[in-house]
Image (cartoon, rainbow, N blue to C red; front, side, top):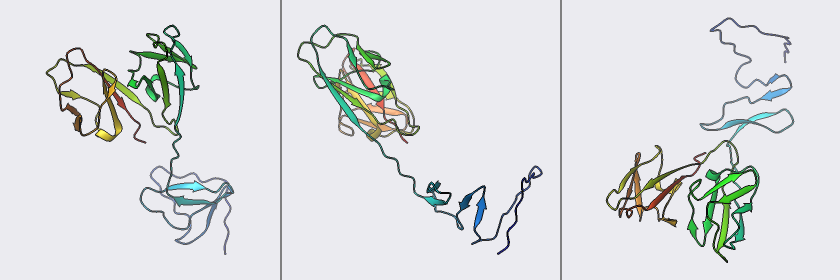
Length: 202
């Protein structure tokens, strides 16, 4: 086996370098590269000891939750750190609240616009923050006539949470999605508060 050591390679623009032949072991700065290509969608991963290989990438999503009880006075509640209104689902007595409209978040403090009633059951559902996926939301207002609303592209009923006046609707049964159009089976009533929560796609 031959070995070539170089300190620096300076290619000309547009030059392609081929290091080794198929099946050769290639070691660059202490990293051993695979001797063959992976399959579509796989990524180059390390074993932590300098050996690289192609493998399927798995994402572990962690869901947590918290609860509290209303007293008709308190509006500030302590929640997990590193959170924003888009990645926390907040329920009061089973009704899903609308981010920013019904509550805000600053640091570890969630502030309700209106204090939950005495003995109201408050539930905080923390959506996963692993990797780079993000959550967004949108709002609209019903007029008792309109059933079609424009939403973000690339969405299906399974990755959008829709609520009307706090009541979470059933995907496929209460609404459908085609392209950028969300269609309600029944038009939301006049002044009904429509909340559209977009779940992360990666």
